[in-house]
Image 1 (cartoon, rainbow, N blue to C red):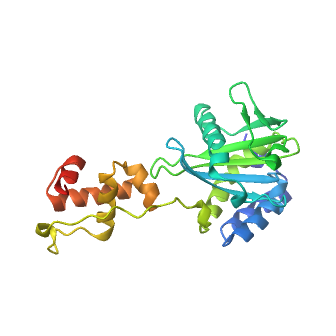
Image 2 (cartoon, rainbow, N blue to C red):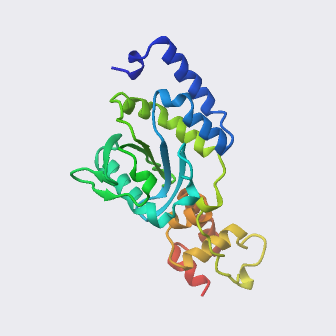
Image 3 (cartoon, one colour):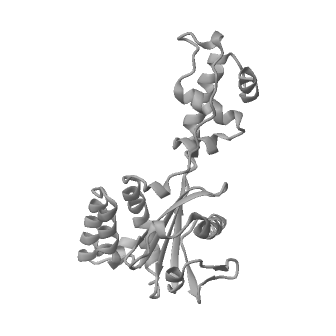
Length: 259
């Protein structure tokens, strides 16, 4: 049965208004007001953790939106939260990518398959968390959302989370990163382009030179994409152009050309 058949006319009207509002979110403060406003009718929560990146590599970044004083993104380090987020994402993937609710008891996520200590006292004061994700098969920038509350989650919230998560995700993607949410990107290795490659037709662009620097360091397309904030597909396209300019067939030959 579709979830909207369980809503009355006022609730349907409110849901539609919330969807339209999500498309107009332009700042982190507006996102906070939207999440903590009438959205609470459908998805009651006190803390939302939004995480993204390549969970398989452990390159995970997160944003915390909360009504609790002092609980903000910069107040929790990546080392504290990343192991838990990786574990929750793996659990979600292994259970048909379905939303699930997990009990929090005395600071522990309690489940037969998943038991993990919460590193922060404010998070540990919650009693349950509803978890759902979005897997990005093209860009490998997967997303995980954890909505935590000190009150029991109503059963209907699962369907509402599945319905509203794309709009929550869209609202977040419209906002700039905080500095602490960006990958720490060291300067790319300096690459000297051989004189024979310096003519206008074969010279590598700045971006291509950057990518070759990371290829020489042994980075994969996915890792380069995260470092440069572009998709692995874009990295692959750049490499194809590099191979053509260098007249080589693969990465090993391209690296050899710069030795």
